[in-house]
Structure formats: structure tokens, C-alpha cells
Length: 142
Image 1 (cartoon, rainbow, N blue to C red):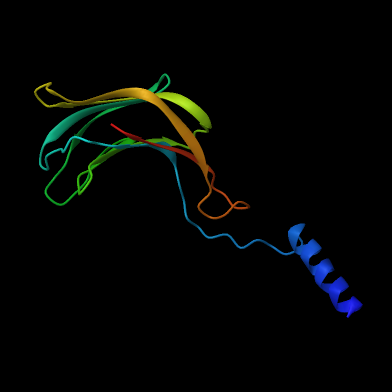
Image 2 (cartoon, rainbow, N blue to C red):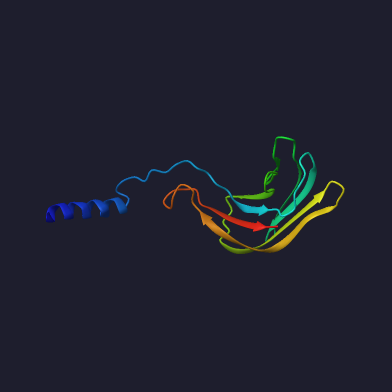
């Protein structure tokens, strides 16, 4: 009995020290901010979008077709039950709280959404704590 307990303890120690390889899946992720919009946007409409995290900003013109989502560089717009804008920061590390802004205008410069505030970025590792990638995500209602 004592020998079995020692074998189990040795196995657990070795597996925790990297003796056995960790199997990681290949799920990817990008750091960014997901803005969940309180304002409904219209499909087949062009929007001018500016999103910023601290002093890092992206601007784009997003046009959403009848069956497709809008995409312009690091900005994407998804119209569905809840409309969202995602500002993709790539492999940028942003832990903690940061100043975040979003501005959405129509093609005629009519203000649709304007939001500014602080967002808390949280660490995400979709393949597990011992596997890459690591990304930083924040979600705000705008």
C-alpha cells in the first residue's frame, strides 16, 4: 500500500514539473476591445469608426453588406441581435485598466455612438494556462 502511494505521489510530482508534455490546442486569440453597442446599426450602411486605447487608435470605414460583417484593418463591425465593434490590438499586452474610446458616425457625419471611459483588460489563454497564445481582452457597453 505504501509503495502504491509513493508511486502515485512520484507520478503527480513528475507530471507537474513538465516531465510529461502538455498537449495544447491551436485556438488563437488577439488582444482587443469588444464594444457592445446599445444603438442598433443598419445593415447595408457605411459607418466611420474610430476606436482608441490610451493613445493607440484605429480608424476605418465599415460597410456592412446584407450577409456579411464589416472589416477594415484592425476594426470589425458585426450586426446581429447585438451589434458590436471589435478593435483588434494584435499581440499587444494590456493588463489592468486603460482609457478607451469609440466613435461611430454615418457617411453624412451624423453621430451614432460616442463613448469614453475606462476598461479593465483581462488575461485570456484559450488553450490553457501552460499554452500560448496569451491575449488581453476588455468588453464595454457603448
